[in-house]
Amino acid sequence: MGREREIGLIPEQRKNRILEIVNKQGAGGVREIASLIGASVSTVRRDLAELEERGSIKRIRGGAMLTLNVRTTFEPDSRYASQVAAEQKEAIGRAAAEIISDGESVIFDSSSTVYQAARFALEKRSNILAVTNDVETASLLTRGGADKLQVLGGSLRPGSYTLLGDPGQEFLQRLHVEICFLGIQAIHLPARSASGFKSEGPSLSDTSTEVAAMKRAMLHAARKKVLLADSSKFGQTAFCEVCHLDEINTIITDTGLDADVKGELESLGVEVITV
Image (tube, helix red, strand yellow):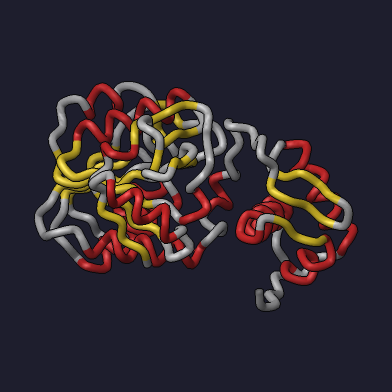
């Protein structure tokens, strides 16, 4: 991995960068991480201690490694989630926008990756009807001159831009849209046998029952269901199941996805696009 100087990151940004490094490599040394993010060794040690307390990593001699028991309700603060795997999310969003046709109705889920899809959809200047439960995405679409925008009502989730519950969730039951772009916290990959995944198959899950319920309502409202998720989300498990992965039509992810996993997902009938 090349050297990256990121002096000036605020604490939560810095912790998210540490998580990204450890997640990508499986482990990382204190001095290596400090060099990559431009922080002092003592600062990194303090951050690792806090991340271990959250259940995100396990500290080992001289560094940290991924824990096999990450808390299923943990997720990065939404204000900084966009900075984790930022290049991958941007590429995924750009590819997602390319599958939108002029005049279509599109649901944009509340997700830092889906936000990028909305951003690039604006650049295409497609005459779409946009539906979202994300305050920040709605603001982006408004500033970008979107002609048709439906913001789902609900209660703002603390510490996020996400609107949950009714009336938005109930309203989705009356909608019929062409595409739903869905973000997700975790993609569970059950143990594989020689013939592939076990019978229950991979599933999508998120960190709360309220979030999972809203995502299910979005999927049910859409003809084409498109999952936007960087490769770090695969092999993870979150608190509440959203759906089985074979209910998804298309996955857009990055080239970090394991080739064998990609092949087995395609065997389930899911289109997998890597960027």
